[in-house]
Amino acid sequence: SVNLVVQVPLTFTGTISSGSYGVTCDELPGLAEPGSKTEVLGLWLDKTASEQLVTVGDLLTYTLAITNVHPYSTAHGVLLSDLLPVGAEFITATQPYSRSGDMLSWPLGELAAGQSFSATLLVQVPLTSTLGEVLNVTYGVYADEVGQVAGPAVVTAVQPVWRYYFLPFIH
Image: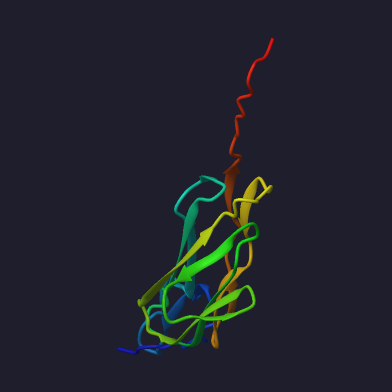
């Protein structure tokens, strides 16, 4: 029997396909087998908001989750980052993190095959907010072998607070 091992860089995600293969010799007719396909995966990133609709002054928790879904390779230099959402004020985040301006980062170093990490970010919708949404568009995870993986925008609607004033009726 012969084993063929193919190594691909951690940056590769997709399908490895082999064509048909076979054996021939002088004594026997050729034997051929169909090819095969193998899926290779990389880093998975997800971000969710605790609420789809908030009111000014409300707290909003974001959960960022990453998983190294590669079947056997460790990712190195892993860094999860998130720019504070537009229309929100920072309250706290999962420790340890670093903050530079509005950018928060969680340096993880290595993430083994199949290993996951999650972080939470707690923000508040300012009482003075006139925006109709809290918009988070810039977040992602970086690994030396993969580069930057970005996620889709996470949008939470902000419902205005209606203020009622009761004025005395004088006739």
